[in-house]
Image (cartoon, rainbow, N blue to C red; front, side, top):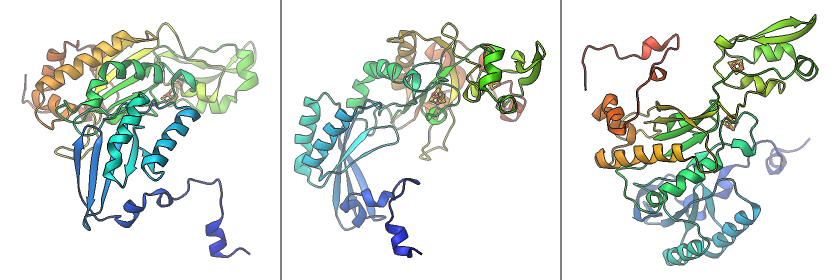
Length: 363
Ligand code: SF4
Ligand code: SF4
């Protein structure tokens, strides 16, 4: 029987290796002993420990879907300037970790030569986190990397400069399964289907799908077992469908993608941070914008508009949701020129518990 030590030393493919193995030695030595950090210039910060140990971070953008050539290139830069240490943040920024301050500017120069922007720290927009989009996922209602590229091309100055009232986080998820952080970002781009799934053919459905698991896949009980031409299949109660696409994941004979009706919604005001106010979920701002690849002008214009008005109106360190709550959501809609529609009213059966129940009115 293997000893405890032998089991510990085993390499397996079950779960990721322990993160501690990959920490920079300065971080390992000062773990839990950090005194403060300071932003030195856009994209550059220093962490200082109780023992006055320092580690510098240079944050750079990544295109999120990255090639092996790109990975090799950033690893070479990490070998050259960072003793091989870099990491990715949860929003896919690349962070180079430097033990020597003298390496900061040469690293930034090399990143510049490779057209990789440096920034995204502090009062700026960081990399946009996104899901898989048309490249990978079967249930995408919009593209992820293409749309994010179009948005970030318009906002890149807010990545490389710290000219925002506070940090601004943008996320994209390409369907309402929301693999991305869209529920807790300042601005969220969320792809949505607007039509129920279509059964391609009952024969195909019978041959490739399990009827009980297809029925069970629907969170709204919109799928029922049925007999058509004397054979077992399913039918969809379209009035109950919320266009989530869950059934298509289980049964590929029920595609939901619809090039004419699928599109994008915009949500605002979420955050993960506990600073100054509690974490918040995003709220619906724009219920529908068309998919208009390759540059999605309607979506990029809408986001630029919200960002511009937020910059003009927010106080120092005020996150987008905090600003909207301070001025009041009706004012948010007035200032941004976004129409308030019936789609903004939550009609979920437990929505009443979330409604404002005070008689106090704020304009
Ligand atoms: Fe797929 Fe939806 Fe996740 Fe996008 S958000 S990757 S479409 S499950
Ligand atoms: Fe049910 Fe969602 Fe499929 Fe509609 S799209 S039938 S709600 S699983």
